Image (cartoon, helix red, strand yellow):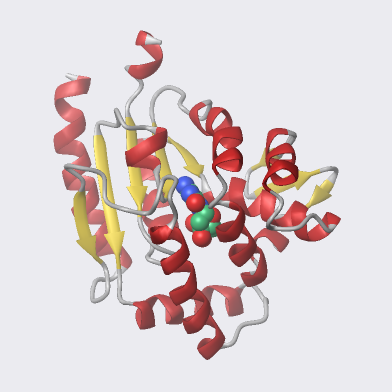
Length: 227
Ligand code: DC
């Protein structure tokens, strides 16, 4: 436990399409750390539920799905039950299903261990909603990022189009607003900044600027631990 908790963790939490993924990937590359996209786990449960016809209201069945997840990660590719689900997991309806299943305490508890297992040397950058508050409360560096809802809808629209997936800006705006309300309003592990987290509003900042701010902060926090 002691040696495990000495592995440095950087947490990045924030609402949908705030730039968490881009920032997390940039930080992991700059620091030479592993990367955990925790949203993928909730997306996998959401995808499996939609694929197998399990109701998003059936906590017991969803908890079983979560406990039995055996994903295989191969670079950017995610395999689930022998299928390449990488692109399917990015679909907007899977994101909405993920946000719905994520409100169940049983689902969250079932996914906790797999997320904590990503903590490996030389360090981990973890992005999600509750990385700094619940999954890695002892993280050495915690960041909370946000951006206005219109800006986030535009960014998600661009991402989906680039991936060749269907997207509609007004539907996106509505869905992101609903997702914010669900993720921040739930009883278990709601989206919120961890105490002491550096908060960055990315509405008017480009990705390199956000990365530079976050990296300077993390290096200052990591230096005493590394030295
Ligand atoms: O980060 P994302 O858009 O891939 O996440 C999809 C959904 O999963 C998000 O709306 C809420 C849920 N989620 C969560 O509850 N906790 C996390 N740590 C990550 C994601």
